[in-house]
Image 1: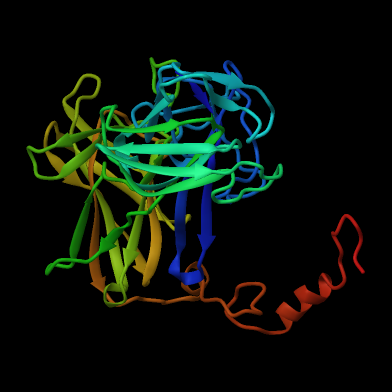
Image 2 (image 1 turned 120 degrees about the vertical axis):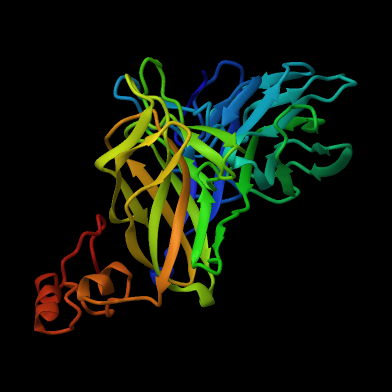
Length: 418
């Protein structure tokens, strides 16, 4: 498996509206053959000066993804692994009709079209797993030439003029954008990129597809557990020697949709949701668990206090399932209660202990009624603190003034404060 390094994701904090994932960005630095050192820095779609990129120097069916779907670092290895079970995008290069240019930056190395070559180099792009979806594809080329995106028989051509100063990105100068490309093809050959001169880098900017929280007449909404919009895991499941993501498979026997199977400690998944104004309120959140084989039994369960539920990176409680669930049947966990305000949020389940071998069937939301803010802790947790309430006790008083005075004129500017 090709090792992957940390990529970039953009997070914006919007107060009580929650954490909005504006875009999931997959960065790919096209390298000279055998060069596994990725570029670190900005691209045309700016995700920050320290953004790292996947180093890609050729190969067929190489998975790439964002850090929220990567297995995190193993203690025995400083590299980052791509999850093959939860692989998002795959790129495939047959090594034909191009050579390699070597350099240390983003725009001074990559694949170069052979000259004189009558057949343009080809790079296949296809989607897998949860990261199938709609993308804007940023394609970088530092030399004057053209890029052709072949999409199910339709070809779109865009050109770059070259001549752009180092460190700058100019649309039509050294990069182009193919917008709204639906990467849902699980087989290669239907979506690919041709180029006439040079291919330096790629950025895949995913258009988010959050789940809309619209309860039915009973106040319920259920999300199939495997239909996550973004996801991540920290699985080092034995006897596998590398880190893999959660397995997902489609179950049509129970009408529940895609299931996440063979859970193990430290795996987690994130679900982007949107709450409309009319659906603001207090909700119970629970999980559906499908029984599966464990050692010595055909029952599965979440042991007590082993599954945490987070809302916008804030722990809201634990759920568990004490009563064993027979194989193939579904049971529901205990519930946690949280307010969902209008706007975008991220809900996460996180398995920090307990048993493996069971399957998650769904994430369930049950609306209880209007929002409930019953104490100061709720005010703080949901982001409604007063601007000058420095100590978070829901009153602006002399204690807050004292905190300000204690830090008056303190300077931590390395160049000094003036």
